[in-house]
Length: 293
Image (cartoon, rainbow, N blue to C red; front, side, top):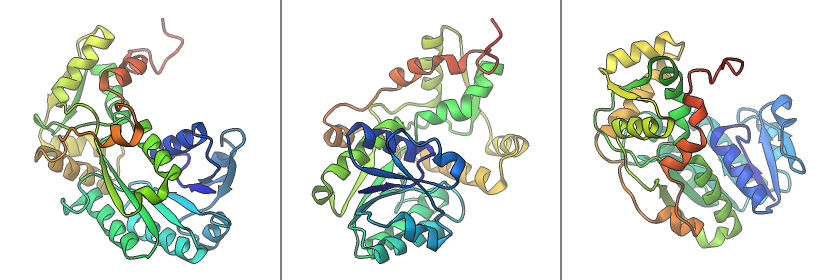
């Protein structure tokens, strides 16, 4: 049986959906009963917390394979390390770790945290596969749709950096494929890139074409973006980590386009245009007010 942590989150939810679609036997791990009640029909759900070792013992009972993902928080190294220790104690056979592009190469923010967990897992004696996904296409809606709706624009300190964005559903499908043949992927680290490396200005042009309304990308100084994020209620640590991640993007290190995802999935990765077309209603001015015509 496979335990999928973070089942209510972006990446964990995608893995859960892909595993169910592949008819794998899974148990979905949630942090509270309210989320657990939303588990897909026929999927066993368990409530556990990376900070509560006793809850992890129960969650891992009878589990052979684990998908490990934690939200991007400063306690990530501690919490995911707890889970790795619990997996060893429970006799888990293989862990698929959701890491991040840049782990091992960029000594700041999210990539640095993930590198520490990778090292912990590699030294644990467990079978493992590490996934290092690039930025998610889903973040375009999550972070940029609000100002696209109000200002017909979105803002960041990215310059003309190119990023090979990936649809998080392809990350989920990659994890499910690995769970189907864990031995084949044991000890491997896969960097997961999308099919095209695009700048934010090019993303704006793609959105404009798909929704039939001009959308602009406006590059702003880092400090302006920091103040905007803080003003929107984002914690200071998170604003700082995002700016550091954008610093990494500006080095050009996240612009690779390769065949890794296609080889894992047996098909091409989803395209940016397909994702934007599927979600074009999110950019409409009345997207948050369904009653407005």
